[in-house]
Length: 363
Ligand code: MRU
Image 1 (spheres, rainbow, N blue to C red):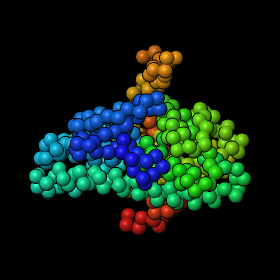
Image 2: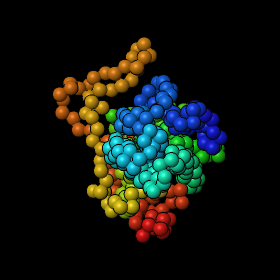
Image 3: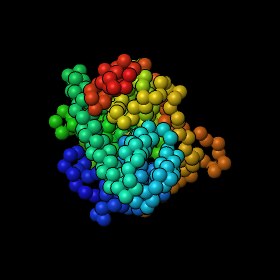
Image 4: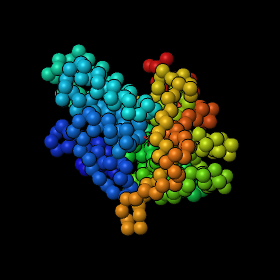
């Protein structure tokens, strides 16, 4: 794990190995119990790491897929090899638009380039995608910090943020999106406390708690079903979530359960913001129905993973293998429930008009 001085965690979730070509990740299926690094050497390994959620979170999926193209081009720089690699990677997870966007960007960069130079071009572009992610999240942190600071006088206590899933360091290359403002607040001495919803069935909230603890940010984990009650007792000043795909109309697709929190926040008059890097905006998606929702294996609901009494990794079956379950991984919060979008270019209304003020190049 290489130290970088840009962000609150000083290490990156993805990086090149010392050999200069293979790719190192931290296996997030082993967190928060164990920090296990994995070295990916083929595009098939990259596709598997994304599919099984060893890496996860929209921006990190995009960055990992970009390195998947590097490994593919290293093995076979032909047009056919490139197309097969992109198809393999695109099929891993359908919802986070960063994946398709990173693949399109890599292919555009490599299109027409001589096969002999493709490897160098691919690694440079993947590196750029990672550096941009860090810079974009840092900027989201700055704009989001202003939102949190504005809430402070009303709060008369540490600003109480409620988040869902993990839209932090672990979901990006560094900083995170929804957690970047929290980290900036903590750095600036703005008192902040985060309510972390567990996020069944994959429990990404535990990743959020782990990285907040690592950065020394006060937080409390709650069961998903407690969020409404905690908001109703006025213990939350603002909801702040990430996104896997935000439509051109400002609808926010994010981890399943986000919509319920937005409904509760709307009913109680609590501001609800999404942190949205430009790479997560799908300009071709005009509304909620345009977002493909990933349906994941029912065993994620039937079986829970954790630690046994001996401290080792353990899993517990809650439901019989044949028990019928549905496992949609994401939901879409309609723009009308979203107070604002915090982007790297500033904060805007969750609407086509709002986005147009910040991204005029996308009419
Ligand atoms: O299924 P996951 O863990 O990949 O889902 C992640 C989320 O839903 C995050 O909130 C989203 O990707 C934003 S990450 C900055």
